[in-house]
Image 1 (tube, helix red, strand yellow):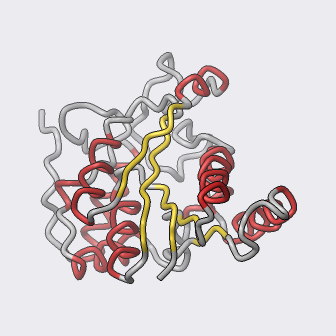
Image 2 (cartoon, rainbow, N blue to C red):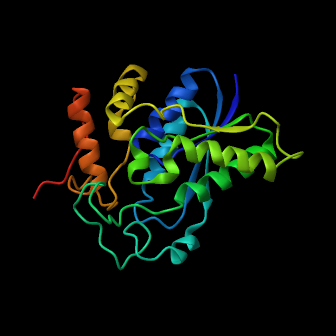
Image 3 (cartoon, helix red, strand yellow):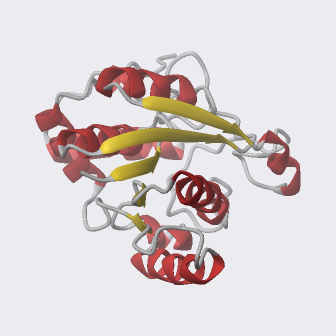
Length: 223
């Protein structure tokens, strides 16, 4: 059993990650990070996940960081969330360097409490639009932290990405086996009352359920 600091936003992937780590018998601490994202209602779902698995949940307030990240739909209220998929050229849905920020905070927490791992729900294919989701990035980040925290963090402490070889539909199938309630996860970038059904995150979610051949219980907005 490992002590794991898991970055859990409340999204589909990270909630399944939390359930997966718990099922494996690890001691899990859920960490959500408010970086000023417009859809941070997702953290309510991270808290639900924590309650489901009997884990602690903590929200770190870095909301002022958003002012340093203009031009992206998730952090700049002047930029609308477009109805397009991630693969659209020049998509403003991606916040470059975001995982560097999130992982730095989580790793600092893990070092301080002498945890064994930091877990993130990066998936296969994510790196095509977000380079800081790649296996190469995670390996490089671990190498950097070995230097940064030498003598202070447990020597074996590392960032792990259990789903790095899985696609979202694979994660959904795993979530089904773990009994995840999909209505207790949030993906929509717009953060409205229900999932919009048209933003990149919603389109990705809808397509993943179709590929997983699993019933999608998500409520989407209908005009």
